Length: 116
Image (cartoon, rainbow, N blue to C red; front, side):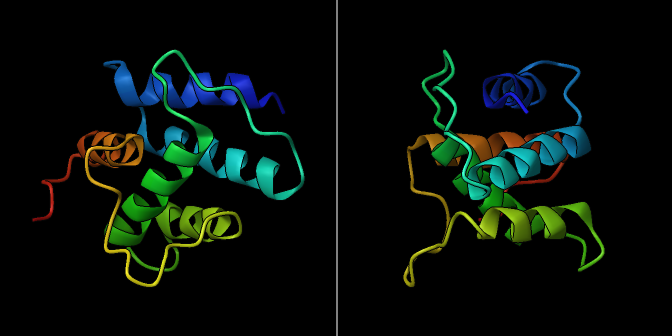
């Protein structure tokens, strides 16, 4: 797996008109698996977003928006959870951060209305 290419694929799904939620989540899950398996972290994309922003924002999206244990989002939250652990007092992505940008982009890509 090429983690840099995977980051580019994730960004394409999030920020281009023809993005696909399931393909994006699969790519995010692959990135989490790669890092969990001891793979090196990819470079930051031109957006300035890091793999950590991607995994953290995606984890919060998957936890908040999965459709049950058989859903792709639930599976991806588990895969990310092997790399990322939310702090005990965390309630969502850090405000005004890259992780919040990823979370918001996934919410839009999934066709959801933002939770207040």
